[in-house]
Image 1: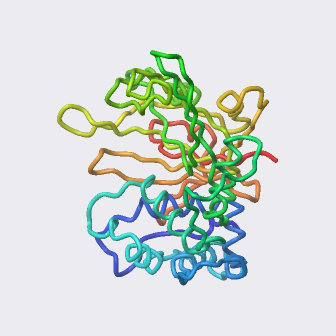
Image 2 (image 1 turned 90 degrees about the vertical axis):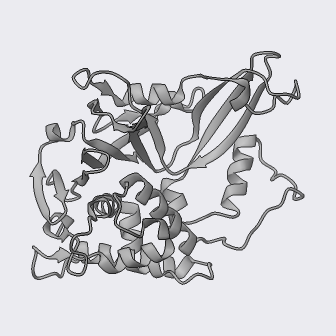
Length: 344
């Protein structure tokens, strides 16, 4: 039985409160095979070391179990995530209240809280007095330091490493730093709604060289002062699951506006190699889920489109309604968060 036979909706006790952002994100995560299988067998109980009780992880796993219960007699069951969301709001009060919520923000907070509960190394706190790990490169040293304090199934699946390169325009000094990421927030090309764009263009904008003025640039290590410089981002370490957020919301002079540019994206064989280290070769990903946003900034609605594991194709999850869709229907101006699985 696939989860397309079971629906996720905001059930009784939550009437009048919009939870479509949660429904869409949970459906996308439920189709993340590595995370789903981990939750269904409750593997975190054997490997977690945190002092925190995994209340949120237990509730999240129960939602996934209900969605994928092969013994469920009624294949049209609607799953109520109310308990899970209540526990989440206790952990993240930012999401309390009745205001419009953002699916990408919810995804970030959810993955962070799940990681904290199932962290395999929650007590290690490195200090600046500790020696650098003996690694061959700065990137691998920084990654090793990260894993010494943050290591979980969430990290295994979703966490990658960004390389930020700074070039001083005065002395031509290059400096490099590395940061971890769980998703990439990509700019959407600025053009008419009928013009369209591509995911490749969004990635090019994300990784293109950016000119920084003196006020926004770090201190140059050689000049020992703030100078005009350029910055460029590339991916140093690719995650198993790469989540790409199409940043459709931007602040104009008086309000937040939503871009309606239709960004096309490949369903298979997305090559991220050109955005990685030099000569890294092809790094291929396949799409398995899309979180869509329709409407306006203040009156929006979220749905999810997910690739079913049984080979039956794609389904659209619109709260309690599930319908099969064609691959052509995936490409729209509503695409907001893309989920890609790296090929083995």
